Each structure stands twice: as structure tokens, then as C-alpha cells.
Length: 145
Image (cartoon, rainbow, N blue to C red; front, top):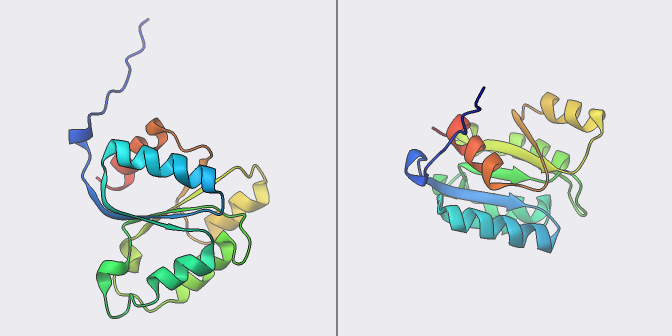
């Protein structure tokens, strides 16, 4: 029995207007930026080192809907304001269109309590680090058409 490999071409994916990476690790951000840029799947790639910095990037979203990214890749274990704190603050923000944002938690955590908290926060996607070409393509094609 032969296994068919799923081949997805760049042309099969829609280009995402904006992606926000939220992670405190410089090496992880570098690798993720490189991967996203090589796939050429977004017009704008933003990076924040923690939840507080990410909220600052989004603070004018009530007056400018284009500030809300289509996809947020969120680490949960960060200093200053962790991923759970960001999720709570993001839910409370008055930003038209934020309900269309896909938030994917990208973490090394294997703690079942973290996964449970992520699900309770309404996050649909939990990916294990490192982000790979395959997991990113699958994420984009499955959830972002």
C-alpha cells in the first residue's frame, strides 16, 4: 500500500493580510519569521516579545480595523504578560473585527492544564514548537481558506 503525500502549493493558499508573532525568544522569532517570509503568505509580519507589547501594537484597533491581524501565533510562557494574560486582555478589547482573528497557541508546553486553559479561552489551535512548514501550511489551509 502506497501512502500519498499531500502536496500543497503556495498558490493553494490565500495570502494573509497580517500575522502577529508573540514570543519572547529571539531565536524562535527569527526562525518563524524566516519560515513565514519564505512561504510568502502574508503582506505584513509583526513581532511582539510579550503580551504587553502585543497589546500596545493593537491599542488603536478600535479606530483602525487594519491593526487587527488575521493570524496571531502566541506563545504562552513569557515574561511581563504571558499568553493567558494576553488572551484575557484581547477578549476585553473593543476592536471591531477581532472575532475574525485566528489565534494559534505555539508552545513547548506539554502540561495538560495549559491545553485545558487554552481551550477554555476559546483558542481552537494548539501547535507544538517548533513551527514547521507543514504545520504552518496546514494551519493556513485548514483555518484560513
